[in-house]
Length: 213
Image (cartoon, rainbow, N blue to C red; front, side):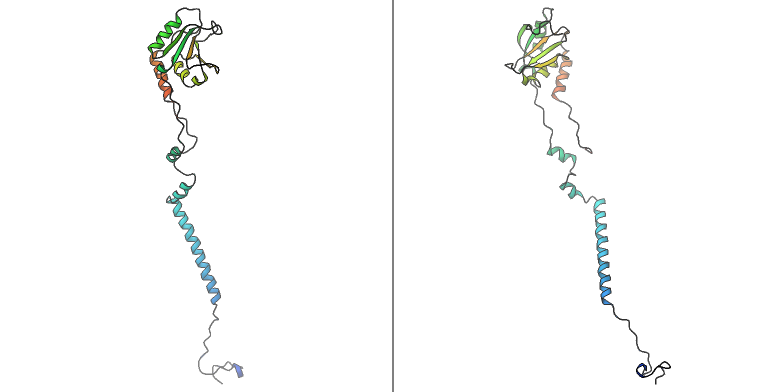
């Protein structure tokens, strides 16, 4: 019996030779493979998340913004320009009938002469028809066809601020009427009327409904 054999053990447990047997742990290849795959997955997810953060903070989302609703204000403006207003007619393209609804004589002719100096074409000059005669309490009434509401009437209205504007659907022709009322004193001063016309021709743009522009 070898001296390496523990006391009391013999037979098949007897250790032969003069060296201890080399004890090896059983190999666990399956567990190692699983651990390797899991580590690779964790590293991959972490790397992808880091790349996303870098992309966000360095402005890499431009492509996404361009594809969605994040385009800049200039692009939105070009895509949907504001509709341009119809140009106003010049005074020389407007024919005005000057009618006096007051008891003061000479107002119609005097007013017509001043409007002619300012470039308007003058039509009829005289007393107002019965439906308006001595019935206009304000400075005056401006009458015209429906098409004159946003064209000729605003231009004529710049000469007589405060005058009431009315349209008649059945009215024929493009001429408009200026009916002088009891509150009339004189037409607006020409410089004031010219400034009013300039403002009409170049209205202020409407504020944008989109924030951040």
